[in-house]
Amino acid sequence: MQRLSHPDAQPGPRERARPTRYGHNRAPGRPSAQDRPRSGAGLQNIGVQERAAGAHVPSAFEIVDYDGGDVPGVTVRGELDLASGPQLERALDTAIRASVGSFALDLCDLEFLDSSGLSVVLRARAMLARDERALAIICPPGPARKLLEVAGVADLLLLYASRAEVNAALVPSGTAGSDSRGWVRA
Image (tube, rainbow, N blue to C red):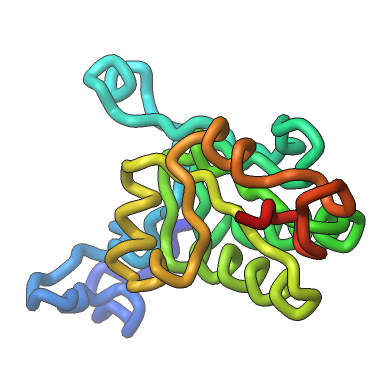
């Protein structure tokens, strides 16, 4: 909505060009970097020309049950960031409370993980640790694994490179040869 004013009137405080963080003046009406959508919000408005030019359109965020035999868990697909973190947090809370023994978190199909997503993963680990349960994270080498290593938490987590690797290490809770957390005793 544009305001009509007298041609000799001075611009109001909101209409003046403001210096940005880097000292450049931003014209009134042009959004700053803070005002622009982030984390995929607004990507639905990308034009056909930009998509054809190779702009990355993230896949939809999705949480499904882990398909790893008798081990309970969830599989996360897409991008785990500030916007999708609360959804995963609720799903993990529900799945952890409804299960017993070890729990698997499959990040094989995760394309992006930021610090807010990492905090959700660490919260799930803490929630399971209170009941002396293990969190097995399936995270092959890639961007998500790199964040875990750079953040310095990779050594605190039980990381596996593939689904086959975690399925070989875990057995259902209460079966012969497993402890109360579902781990095979060596």
